[in-house]
Length: 428
Image (cartoon, rainbow, N blue to C red; front, side):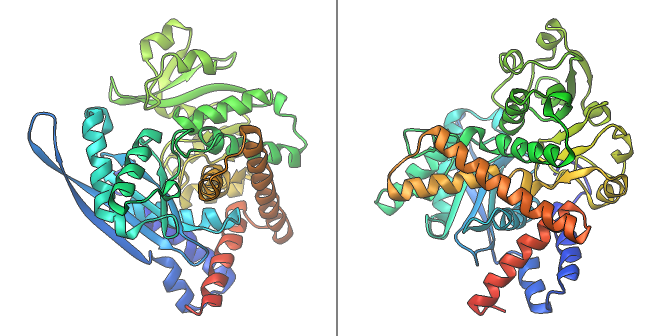
């Protein structure tokens, strides 16, 4: 989605094919897991504020539900494609499996740009999306959630529309809702915190104190902000963040050698994670090109934006000082870049493990909604920490035992669990 010619689904299939060979999967299982089980391509007519009618293209892809109801976000993006959604749904299957929660993988999206839409128009897109797929989603079937450029308000509109259609209360139909309306405390922090929980454990394995480390972060949306928050609380220093500027229609890297201040940057950030360039300069930040984040002399890189960000073209710009890459985004590293990173011995925490905190907390939200009893924030984050830490060490242990790449170890665990569920059901 971030580059012409790049196909996220092809990349997801290449990653799967490699591990299918390592696991010696039979042909039937390969063909079942290599493609989504079902897809919905929908058209959403919306009466715009100027009185005209515009039709938006939307999607919902359900990759696999052998281990439980499908789970996955809905993103609003002007460059959304069917293949991007297919890839994200596939990765969601592996993500739920690697952290061992009883859910499958799904993903949704609408080709639109919320920057250029009023809140009323966005609400109509949300309700229109639900009207088109209402019979194909549900708390026991497929549970959507927020993703790029969607939030709790969008989810609440979608839940409300679903309940209007069904005539009953179904708070578990969707997650990422506002607290007090079926949302879980701790959900906002979950993905970013989950990334840092795994980085913390990787540093422990290496015998490195977080206080002696620095990091560069790509992105400044929800995931990136909370990753910065927890990492700095552990004592680490983030020296730069990179994000898209809606005003200039380009991206910048905002750098401060003494470390970025989350609080001051949040005050000059729009709701889409874009930082005001002039105000940042006034605060003493050096403004560099958007891709400068990858070449910083830091210990840790945290790509937390979109897919296809560390590629064969820029991987050699990564500093020799870098020890860990914690993938907060989905699919940020291409297979070509992976080869170089592996050869250099950089410890990679793969996306579907590192950023699984979001779906794990979404699962917690489902559980709370279904029993109509909600936990306090500390309990949610404690359960999340336990789940992420356990999953990390299971993957790291297999990688060490078999002397394989962390991404391959994570895939072997995830794919094996899904394949076994398909076998036990008699599907293959």
